[in-house]
Length: 175
Ligand SMILES: Cc1cc2nc3c(=O)[nH]c(=O)nc-3n(C[C@H](O)[C@H](O)[C@H](O)COP(=O)(O)O)c2cc1C
Image (cartoon, rainbow, N blue to C red; front, top):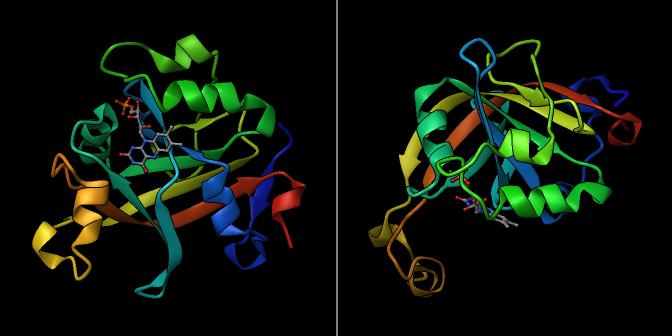
C-alpha cells in the first residue's frame, strides 16, 4: 500500500465515517513478536493536554486488553473496503484462541515512532502512545439507560486516551 506521513493538521478525516467503517486496534510489539488485531467501532478523536488524541474503549474480556495493558503503544488501522471479511473475523474471533494475523494473511510492519506494529494492508495507520487509563463506572452515568443497553453484563470498558504520534496514509486521507 502506497502510504506517506501526514501531519495531523492535514488529516482530512471524517472521524465518524472512519469509525463507522470500523478500524483495527492492534496491540503488541514488533520486537517481542506479539501482534493481535481487534476490530473497533467505538472511540473518540480530539485534542486534550495540547495533544491530538484518540480514546479507545476495550471490554475486560478482550485478549487485546492484555496487550494494551502490557505495552505503552498501539496502532489503529483502516483497511480498504474490500477487506471487510478481515474486520468481521477480527471482530468475532479472539487472539486467545487463534492467531488472527496468520489466519487473515495480514502483514505486521514496524512502526516509525512506536513499538507496536502497523499492518501493511492498511490504507491508514495511526501510531498511538497511551497517556491515560480509566474504567467506565456505572455510578457515573447520568443517563442510566445506557447501563442496561450497553452493559447488561456490567462489563464496563477500560478506556485509554492515547496521543496520536504519527499518521501514515494513502492520498485520500490528506486535505
Ligand atoms: C464492528 C465491531 C466493532 C467492535 N468494537 C469494539 C470496541 O470498540 N471495543 C471492544 O472492546 N470490542 C469491540 N468489538 C468486539 C471485538 O472486536 C471482538 O470481541 C474481538 O473478537 C476481540 O478480539 P480479542 O479477544 O482478540 O481482543 C467490536 C466488534 C465488531 C464486529
